[in-house]
Each structure stands twice: as structure tokens, then as C-alpha cells.
Length: 355
Image: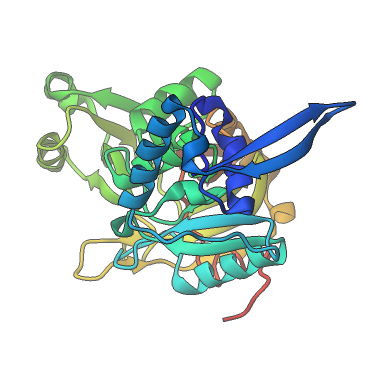
């Protein structure tokens, strides 16, 4: 079933399994100038040794428990890709039109992409790669599935290491300090430190949870009373909070980085009458305008900060949020699961379909 007693060979076994489509077989190799396949023999249960019989029964049962049908490989495609989505998510990283474009783009380069949902308990080992288009968290099925896929030898975006690093703003703050990336003055505080220092802040200031996302769990305090209110609210669900210098700008930069290369640049303007690009205060989230800009036309300092910030995180897909004030560029955060919507981030580069 694409597995081997020695786990080190699982990736190789899977490559054979997805093409041979037999539950058990033996591959004979011969060393000439390079290793060559001499022959392949499909096996029946009676030919197995006792240890392999036990391993086969265990592996086969695990396979059947997934409640899946065997997915044969297609000669038309080189690889099979799973795109993880949640059809009920209110603010997914990509809208339906963008997801359709992803499928079309993968098809053009010989990759068969299909959507999976965690509730379906997918057998991730049947794919060659996993692309997560659902909001990621550490204590969440997105992280568990990414970890499983990576162990199975799949290429994964977002990889679990990036999820761990990017969803923890405390880690990011300490990492960016070590590598010398400029950012707003930030303090990491527990309840005791907060009580001691809350009267020393310059207002307005920002207070946020370590795992905040999509402008949620982030507040602007105009005075010490508001700061106490927001901080005490956050402390009900976290041991640590971050307080940050407020840098007013008309827009935030978002630089998309994949494998150490810039793939898009956008200006996200603040929501009308609000200090963030997304206003979550009403019954329905309101977003500001956007402007997609050719990276060649973007200030090189903006691109340099984005690339420097992602260099020590990994080679995955990241959305780097930045503020530019005069000659200075400040890092706000690095997102492991950046939004890519139809007609926004793809306005200039990479669109290959229309919807």
C-alpha cells in the first residue's frame, strides 16, 4: 500500500504504488552506471514472510479505515496535488474564483489538483503535494495535516515549520530583533509586567494577541483605561500579550514571497473611517481599497525588508505586512497563509484564467 517496513523508503515506495496500483509488489534493482529497475513482481499474500504478513495486515487495515477508494494515477498528469479548503470558512485565504484559477494553473504544468476538506478525513498519502488554502493555526487540523503530509514525503505549503513560526508573534518579534529588521517599538508582557508598566505608554498604542490574524485580536487603545480594558480581555485567553507603537499610515504594504522570490506587491488601504485595513467592529467585516503594483515599481527598501524577514523562516509562501513612513520601512508581521484572491493579488502577475 505504498509503505515499507523501513520508513526511510516510504517516498520511493509511494512513487511505485501510485503507478503500479497493486497492493503489494517487489521491485528488483540492478547497479550499472546508475541504479536501474530490472523487474517488478506483483506479490500475493502467501509469498510474504511472517513479518511482512503482519506489516501488510496492519497497513491494509489502516488504509481501509480511511474509508477511501483507490485513486489511480493519470498518465496525463505528472503529480497529484491536494488543496485543503474549508467551504464554510467566512474569510478564507482565497475565494472560489482564485481557487479555480489555481486548479487551472496547476493543470497547465502537469499537476492534477483537487480540493479536500479535513472533515472528509482525506488520505493525504495518496498525493504528491499539499497546498493549504484554509486559515492555519497550531492547535488545529491544518497544522496536524501539514505535519502528517510532510512526514509522508509530500511537498507542503504551508509547511508546519512556517505555521509554527508565523502564527506566533512573540517568536517573530524575537527573531526579527535578532536579524535586525526594523519594526514598531514592541513589548512582550505578562500580567505582572503589564500592571507595572501600563502607565508608561505613549497613546494611542496597539495591543494584540500572540496569535491574532486578519485584524482580529488587535486593538488600538487611546488611553490607559482602554488599554486596561483590552489587555484584561486578552489575558482571559493568553498568558502573554504584545503592546506596540502605533504608526499611522494610509495603507499597509503586503509583499508576497514564494521560495525567496517576490511574486506580488499590494497596497491595502485602511477601511473607511477605521485604522485597520479590515474593520471587524460591525456585523459584517468591511475592507479598505487595494492597489496591486508591479514589484519593479516598488521601493527596493520595501522588497529588501520583505525578503530579509522571510529568509530565516523558510522557503514557503508568505505575505509580509509592512508600513512605510518616509524613508523608513517597518515590519508588522509575516503571514504563512497569505490571502490570494481573484482580482486582487493576481492583477499583474500570474493570472492564466478568467472566471
